Length: 280
Image (cartoon, rainbow, N blue to C red; front, side, top):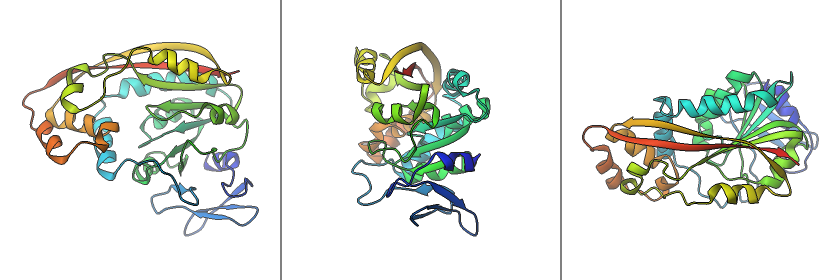
């Protein structure tokens, strides 16, 4: 399955095709001789030049996300995403790109249900370390989604984006005709009971309309579903939830420690929208 994923990749330097060299260390080698060695954890860093200007999630943020997701709090979302992707991934050689794969939790659910080949990209090497362990059969790549994707045209059947940046032009380019882009976004009221105390931003009205507008010219709107997940969280889980997302870049350790000492359980509801878009 990894070889199938590699066949879809292109060298970020010259856009040539890759071969996977096996040995003491796995290496992606292109026709022109550009080499990218796998890290010891199994992922490949394809970023060249100055890399990315965006702030990657830290090791502590990734650890918080891993603890929260491993506890199963968002397992309902992972199942719903896998079910949404299952139809377009029925082809024998189906391929899914998970843009902003993080720790690989959602990609794992998609691959387990569909049996497809996977490519996961993220700018955080700390996230990719965990993603490569969870999905060793996938190609896990350090990459900036705002740059042209290191993939050939018309190679993916599905692109999934869960709480991550979206690059519609590139997603449309790498998807096969009729391919699906599946985007997960929070809905108004998402984690409302704890958002204020954790420093998490509220969800603005009209988010769905802005998402649809950003896809015009590349995608047609498909099906959409809402998903509510009731949660009962300990203080430590509230702290992990706050730290694992964008707010984690701004929260201080003292604020996290205060959240972790919350007594009893905190009830809240995660509210998601799973939106499908089809290549125009």
